[in-house]
Amino acid sequence: MSAPATIVGLGVVDASGVRGSSGVCAAWDALGVDPLGSGRTYRALFGVAHPTFRRLDGGTRALLLATAATGLERVLSPEQRDRTALVVETERGSLETDLRFAATLDGDLVEGALFPFTLANTSLGEVALQHELRGPSLCLSIDAAERGASLAEALALLRDGEADFVLAGRVESLPEPRGDLDAALACVVVLLARPDVRMPAVVAWPGDACDVLDAPDVLDALAARLFAGR
Amino acid sequence: MTTRVHIAGRGAVTGYGGGVTALVDGVWSGRRAVRPRERTLDFEAPTSVAAEVPRAWCDAHAGDSLPLAFALDAARQALAEAGEPDRARLGLVLASTKGDLSGVVGDGDGLGQPARLARRVHDALGLGGCCLSVSAACASGLVALSLAARRVVCGDLDAALVVGVDQLCRFIMQGFGALHALDPEACRPFDVTRRGISLGEGAAAVLLTRDAARSVGVTLTGWGSANDAYHAIRPDPEGGGLLLATRAALRRAGLPHEAPTHADVHLLHLHGTGTVMSDDAEAVGLARLFGGATPPAAGSKGHTGHTLGAAGLVETLLVLEALHRGVLHGNAGLHERGVAEGLDVRPEARAIAGATRALKVTAGFGGVQAAAVFET
Image 1 (cartoon, each protein chain N blue to C red):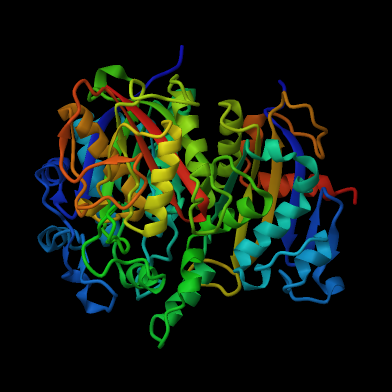
Image 2: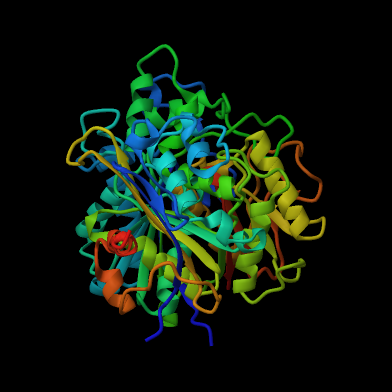
């Protein structure tokens, strides 16, 4: 059975640092910053400035860093980006920003600048803007039972010809636990290409597609496979 | 041969109360659900109006959280109209911006994740298929519809229940207020004096199926979405993403997509929020799509308020009704056009003779643009 997609990029951000198929591999300690970095982190890692990085919430910063770590800028031409979709799943969503915003409701000034980022979808907009990705853009709110839904949807978009490439993955950012949600910092994204688009894979599609999509932590498994030898 | 996706069931809870009949009768009568605030008066917001679900409906459904009550009632209406299909093979796709925020702004257990609300709806209805949630801001409804349609076409699901829902609360109203996006009075989409949105709330449900025997007579033939990649919250003033999304939907429907004509699309249903930038971008983008002059067009947020994650589905119900009646509803709040000439919007309702095909568009924060094509 042929692979349903080619994995042409992979990026990971977690509590230890940033790494990806672009070759970037940096620990927060070595960068001299707290996890997710400061205003200069994006330039330090990728050689280009991000003018609003320091003002963004954790989920958006993680998604931006992991995306850049895939090497997408080098892999995709501008024309290909018009046909590149974004599909991201999240359990915690924008809860970090929701709580920050809600705290301002009782103050003298409601923080309007935070409000758009109470939609996890806005994080995808920042990624689309940074990399000029104009394909479908889809944020999936998931629970544990639906982990991997972003990959299933990404493959559906490729299969149906709605996109030639899809950046798919999961982002979780919550500094403090809330309710039954644990604190978390994790983002894994894969850049997928339609199988008939000839591009080198950075990691092989693992086995039967159905098996992969049934595995709740398929994204983590892919990341582990890519970085196992590094 | 392409698998067709039929609409088999519909449901709604809106500012007009429960039921699709209340919604469509209200809109086609020209009556506005945007009224002086009542339930939301316990907090400040820079507007005097909102399209709240009537107090009597809320009182009658006390017990459940309001978002859950809205979603369940709309879903049950759709299931009933569809003839109660086998729930074991029915999937749910829920569209919402924030689901239930009761634990973020109060003592409830809702933490703003649509997936949690979706799971409650899924379990309460006893569905056996997938349980997915889309959070694509104000475009959530149409994006969810396209996700569900994709699953039905490929055979992952025989049928899918698509539910859009959002509730008015302090978090939402003060958030839009802080962005200076609320009209202090009832909104005026596409009017020269427009100043912003009027918020609404509620739920809408559509049941999609491959089973033509269950169809209410309308088919979803095309869908598409795109990103403006222009700004996190402002739309591309040239309508770039809107063009990509609409062309993708028309292509999927097997229609001319580069330069469609009025023979290809008989009526347009608009996003039409009432903000200066959004209405301008929509008018420019759609006029470009149709070579300078659009087919007859209307938006409904002047009637229903902006129901956020539910909007795309509430408005889908109005598209279906417009095709059924052969009459496009009016644009509440529009008195003097304040957008590009090429957008054919009028204050009053009008008959569209022989209308069988409609294009629906929506947009949302994060640059999302989405479109769908419906045919009778």
